[in-house]
Image 1 (cartoon, rainbow, N blue to C red):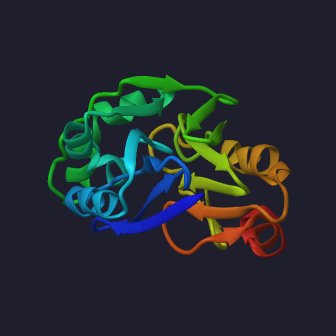
Image 2: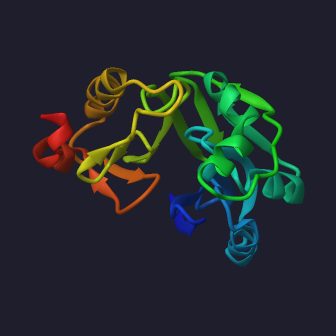
Length: 206
C-alpha cells in the first residue's frame, strides 16, 4: 500500500494519502489544511484520487476538504453522526482563534463494517465513537488510520460536543485491539505506533 503523510495546519494534523500500488488509485484521509500541497503531492506521485475519507469532522481535519473536492471533482465521505460538526466547523475554528473554513459537501455516508474498494485494496470502516460521535478508523493491509481516537501514549480528548471518555476507551479496546498486536497505528496527530505498544505502555488503556 502507498502511504504518504503530510502534516497540515496550525494544529499539525496528519493528512494521509493512501493508494494501490498497481492501479495508483488513491484516497485522501483528513485533509485539514494545505490543500495546494496535498494536490501537488498527488500530482507528483502520479496518483488518481477517487475520494476523500475522513476519520471525523472537527475543523482541523476538514479545512482543506472543499478545495481538494472542487479540484479533483471527487466525493467527500464521512460517518453521518459527524454531520453536525461539518455544519458548525467555522464556529469551531473561530473559537480557537483561527479563520473560518470553507464548508464542504458530504456526498456519501459510511457505516461500521463497510468495505471501501481502492484499486486492488480493500479498506474496512471501523466506527469508533468517543472523540466525536461519528469517529471512524480505516483498516487495510495491517495499517489502521485512527484520526483522534488513539495516539502514541495517549487518546483523543472527549470534552468537545458529542465526546465521551468511556465510549472512547470501549471503542479502542473492543474495535481496535482485536486488529492484532502487529497492526501499525497511524494517528491524526503525532508519530505512528502499534497496537502492541499501546496495550503495553498507554497509561489511558491500563
